[in-house]
Each structure stands twice: as C-alpha cells, then as structure tokens.
Length: 401
Image 1 (cartoon, rainbow, N blue to C red):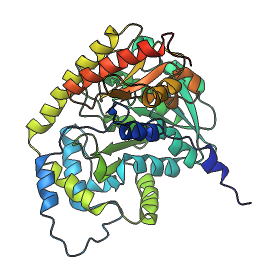
Image 2: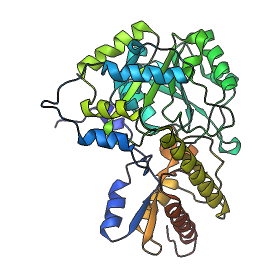
Image 3: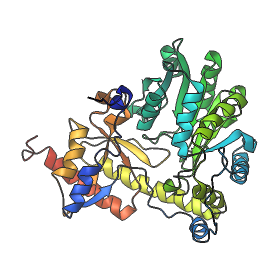
Image 4: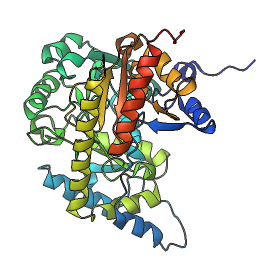
C-alpha cells in the first residue's frame, strides 16, 4: 500500500486553523463565533487600492518578473529610506507573502540538518517552514512573567553549536506582541558577527510598534549587513492579507541570486496583488495613523478586560495586534475545542488559538492562548464576556471533562 511521506506526516497542523471545522459546525448550529484566533484584520483596505482593483483594465493577466515588478520594488526602496535604510530595488525580491520569503530564505541559507535559534513562543509556521527545508529549530523560551522580553544574549550563546547557522527574530513579535529595542538589536548584532550567523528579521508588524522609542529595523545593523535578511508583507499594514504580497530584503548579492532561482522555479508572484500593493503606498498618512490608534484602543480594552477575569493574566503587548494570555485551565487545546463544540453564552462563543502550537514542546503553552485583537471594540467586549462565562462553566462542577 502506498504511504504518505514522513516529511508530510510529521508536519504540524496549524494551531491557528486546526479548529476551523468546529467553528464552522458551531455557526451551522446558529452560534455566533467571535474570531480571536487569527491575525485577519477587520479594518478596511485603503480605498485607493479598492478603487484600483475596480479599474484594472488588462486584456491578459500575464506573468510578472520572478523578482516582482520593478516599479513596486522602487516604491519599497523609497519606503525603507524613510526608515533610515538605503536600499536599491535590486536588493528587494517580491514574494508570495512573507511566508514564501521565509521559506526561500531558509532554503537559500541553510543545508539540511543545520540549526536555527528561534525565541518561543513563535509564529507556528516558522517551524513548518524549517521542517520543509530540513532545518532543526533550536528553541529559546521567553517568559510570560516578564512580558516575553528578549532572553539574555548569554542564553542565545549557550545554544550555539557547530551546526547553528541562523537566528530568527520577529519584531514586533507574533504571537506575544513583545517588541525589541535598538539596544537589544545591537546585542544580537554582536552575536551574529561573533559566530558569522544569518539573522532573519520578520518585520511584518513594523507599523504597529507602541513602545516609546521608534522601531529599529535590522536593516540598520551596518556591521552585519551581509548577514541580515528582512521579511516584510503588505498583509497586515494595509489589511490586504488576501493579495499575498511580501518581500525578502537583503544586501547580500549571492543570497539574492540564490533566492531568485527559487522564485524562477515558482515563476512569478501574484500579478494583481502587486498592482494593489504598489498603489497602497499612496494611501493618505491618516490611514495608517487611524489604524495605529484603533489597535492601541483595542489592545487596552482587551488587556484590561482579560486581567479583570479571575485567574487570567496577560502582559501588555507593545506591538502587533496579539497577546498571549495565561488562563486558569489545565489544557488549552481541550478548552479551545470545548468552547466551539460544547459551549455558548447568549448564542455566542469565542475561537482562540491554543498557545501549545507556538512552542516546540507543547507542554510549555499548556495553559496559554494567543488572542488577536482584530475585532472592533464592541465585539471585543462581547467576546471577553463570553470567555469569562466559558471559563466559569469549564471550571465548574458542571464540566465533566
């Protein structure tokens, strides 16, 4: 009998999407599901992009260049200049979302069996991409007690072996919302330089940085500019997840030439997505300002509401639109499934992402969940009430689990 590959068999299911069938069943039964499980913003895409979509007048939807349209890469270079990073369009490759940038970057920089240090909890797909590329993830655990702050550099150094080839950071962080300062980036710079490592920096949530000091991009680490690979995306910045346009940015010409070979093998990034991405740069400054302020208000409402629930703790995230919350439960996977399959309050329930899926060892996130504050404030208030009632019911004598 034919068998599925071992590679495919051991690839983990998405902790963000694996409960989707239960959510769909709840909806079929007339229950309103508050989706706090996935980073899908509910805020509108810039009007200028939607208008562009309606007036695209092409007779043929052709392939684009494998590295993406030059005009888009020129606009991106202008954008990075405003961040203090001088780049040529040739140092930017357009990808099918930041996901493809990460996967192609891993495959270009590391061989099968190489190791990469990642702070955890971490975006679950980092592990999937690493596994697809045959790379071993070496986890470094950050703690909820100190807001998931970057671990000491000595802790990174203790994990380095002859097979360690890269460090990956996400700033601001998904799933914790933690942010890393310029001084912390400079310490990582010294580590990368000392051991000649690659530094992957996922900066998709750059525009949502709520710390007092401004975001410091890894592109500004001049001493290791040949080692830095930044991954970016239009998905969250402009509420354009569905256009699937991201980018890999590097000043290392050999790396770029290698990544381009992978890009040529997949032919081209999304044509229509690139058109919309490029015009999104012309959205008024008020667009991002309003989005930024809205997320701060949602964050404050959510974190205050969570910490007012008996037994719940969440640190205040300083970036992105996620938090990891600790709940008074024994098994987050079981609880999140139960909310969808066996519980409702006033015809509503909530969908959360079990944090176990954001750790290499799921035991580390056994009583934690990731919550995305991507619902408008009145809906967040309702979701918090539903969660509070769900926890009471789950932990009561009525719960026979």
